[in-house]
Image (cartoon, rainbow, N blue to C red; front, side, top):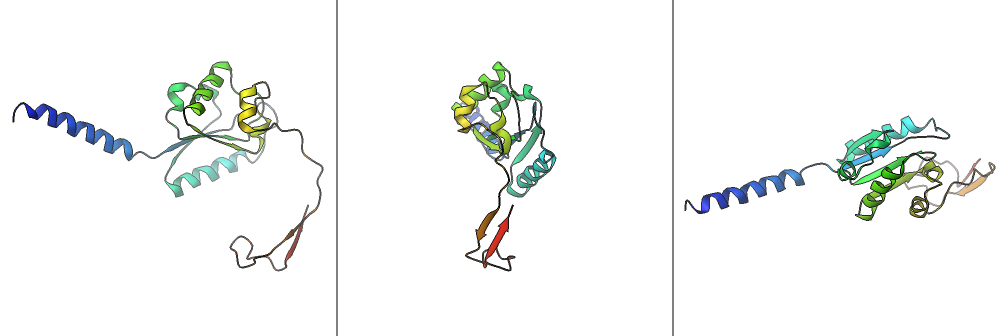
Length: 164
């Protein structure tokens, strides 16, 4: 029995560590550094993502500090959100760390001007799928409301909604 005691203690320690690790909230890094146009909606976006985290049981860290993009630090996150980023916001070492993070299964969400970011980094452009090429001129759109009983459309009083 005495010979089994260390093995049992080791097994219990592993179980305890595994249990504690599995109880950690997933973390998301919200990155909003800009070196070009700065959207006034960034603050509201951060607030909304923090609220989503609270309501859906994931932790949210917000930053504009590109030095957070290291292999070691990015391992902490289930996903990285580029929230209205603009310009070339990461240096080559940070780009390398982020590339490895994505290649190892890390998540990415690009919001709005994330496509106005890192024009000089072809890997990023391929990942996001396209680069921002300017806003089209404003135009009127006509929406046809087919289901007014749906929560998102229930407030419409008509079946046609025009918006510029």
